[in-house]
Length: 215
Length: 225
Image 1 (cartoon, each protein chain N blue to C red):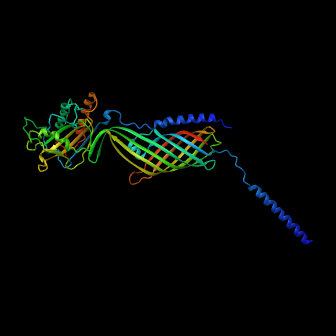
Image 2 (cartoon, chains in turn red, brown):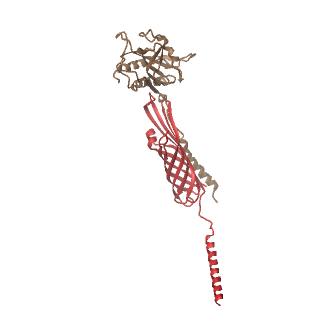
Image 3 (spheres, rainbow over the protein chains, first blue to last red):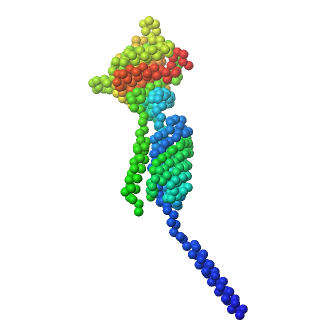
């Protein structure tokens, strides 16, 4: 009798464990995520540049000539990896200027340019899901190669110095949904390059406005 | 189901709006008018003491450096007198005195004025200085003769001469290299493209750029250090 009781208890315990296991297994079965999401964004911007540091010393004016394209591939609803290509042209008509170049003194109307081009790998975190939100604030950072060229023309004589540097660019902005596949984009990006033997550190801001195409 | 036609229309509109300022960003600006290309370049011999000489001489003609085979000189002589008068005015203001019959002085320095009727880049300037052979280096140095050529003793010079450029050279006549027949140029001004363009432009640009050559050469003058 005692043995029968033990067997009965054992069977009951085993069956309960089995049922529990079955229950746990059922709960861990992957459930298809039905949250709407976008796969990627292609962005084209008009850029305004705000000169600081060496660029400001050379041109003293902000730039209204700039453009950028950007691609973001979404790893999740909010996180994306991508790249951006930027071009910015700072320009200043300096008027009459006298310079001393290797003991040759030159006077003429001077025009200064700083051209910057960058190709950066980027990562962005979107605070809301672009697929479901009307307004999508985001934070991002880029890192990669930055080409900077300083050019001066004085009386038709050109002086030029350029170099490639490694740069980083933190960014904050937002997307405003116009329709399911189209957003307005606006952001502010701080561009910083690490100086080397040929060129010192370059710093400037870009204010971007454009359109983002969602796929 | 999304309306493809509507999607395409919105994308094309957005791209068009985005591309207008993007195309605008390609405009680089820069010099527009002839005077924007005016350039006054000066060089000098740092070892020369410009406060030492008192008397100077300057021929009353601008010699045009015309390429061989040229039938019509593109540069006018109309502004020779005005240009040379301005140079004399600047020299006199700096305290130098023109050697002439009244003071019967021997000039220590000579200024020559040449104009380029063609463009030279990296030119060997000795070639065109044979143009000055007729002058015989003035009334005061007949022993130098036409075989002498100016040279730059110890400094950089600017070797790109645009058409219409006026070159003023100051030579140290007291230190001619008699062995090699060379006259040391102690100061040179190159006023690029001065005699190019319309008449109204040339007049005002001469009056602006000739004084500029002297203004930027702060070492010139009897009171210079």
